[in-house]
Length: 208
Image (spheres, rainbow, N blue to C red):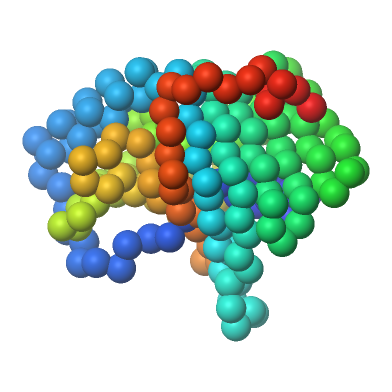
């Protein structure tokens, strides 16, 4: 189950190895306003992604590639094309998984843990996680980016996630990079490229 949690959260990215500094209170408020306002304008989003899974016992990260589809507020699909054929769909209160032809589903209704997982994933991609009391949030900046660092408060979430880092490149109000740090300090990173906003996505994309 723990492995599945990490697979389901596999929409994350490269971090920026530039010098970080803290945002001022004014910068934080302006940043939050920009992201929240723009996230409300997002009806759909598609993007290519490259995922890097870094584990202490491996010499090199495990690299995966795929495509992401998002339809606000709660429909999302991640298609992994390399190195395996795997996809996960969040839609109508359920999670649908197709692991190389092996299909399964989880009903989120009444399952707070998976419901929260769904909210975290969609919120991470859209960037709209700032209006929640589920995290302790700090903010940093580099010369090319703004970064929100979210530490979960919920015990069930803290078992799997130590910190989520959302990176926004300068001039952009959608997430370009996300980093998921586990309690062991292993982490998953994803870089989103070729992003496209508010273009029609066929309903069949979110059909299992």
